[in-house]
Amino acid sequence: MATTQEWIQGSRPRTLGAAIAPVAVGTAAASTLGPITWWRALAALVVALALQVGVNFANDYSDGVRGTDADRRGPVRLTASGLATPGAVRAAAVASLLVAATVGAFLAIATYPWLLLVGAAMLLSAALYTGGPRPYGYAGFGELMVLICFGFVATVGTALVQRNGVPAAAWWGSLVTGLPACAVLLANNVRDIATDTVVGKRTLAVRIGDRSARRLFVGCLLASFIAVIPIVILNPWAALAFLAIPLAVAPSRAMLTRTDAPGLIAALVGTVRLELVAGSLLALGLAIS
Image (cartoon, rainbow, N blue to C red; front, side):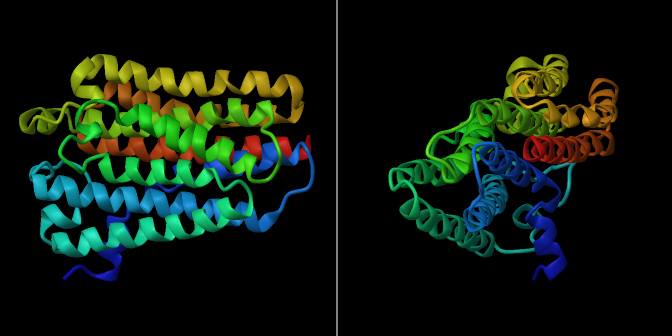
């Protein structure tokens, strides 16, 4: 039986910055139009975190039962390692997604009931990432869905439940948070190209190749900072986000030069840190503006 610490590690806590950053940016973008309703911001954060944890456990379960994680070079997975039964990991995924669904439904009904449809789509995307008969994560669409879910939906959705309308800063902010999240997945998938190829998992990294995937990683980080520029034009203090640029150096260097698993894992963790710091600085700048 897995210990509490192993369950915590199985939830992949080092990836949770990708859920926090878009909520912070979306809330701050909405604050440029008026006062914030803080319980809505907290609810949006709970939804994002629960969805992220749910996706992580669902991925652990699906890859484990498919045998995809049998020869991993990355952090331990509960199902593949035998630390927890597939049923237990699946139950953890369902429980996390139920939390996201319950809090999200309450927030949608209190603001815009049509958001229930968006929430249902997000839950479906979480379940079908590596689950179901034709998981889209195995077909190379993982990064695109990450940009949609943890970029646009998370950032713009958080702003929308605060205000009747979405400021331009939230749309551009979706790229500031979403593109590094895509880079996180790229770092993970570049590390696993060899093992994914063997089991027929055609991630984007497998499809475009190692070198192109690494360049795309750097391109995502660069583009995320370029997306700050339009925000700065209307909200000058948003330029605080540029203070995070030095944090992009180490992950980029690792992705361009390292082939060992520890080096690529460090790039992944560094990218999550970059997204969280850049998102926090952007949110601070928007709040000051």
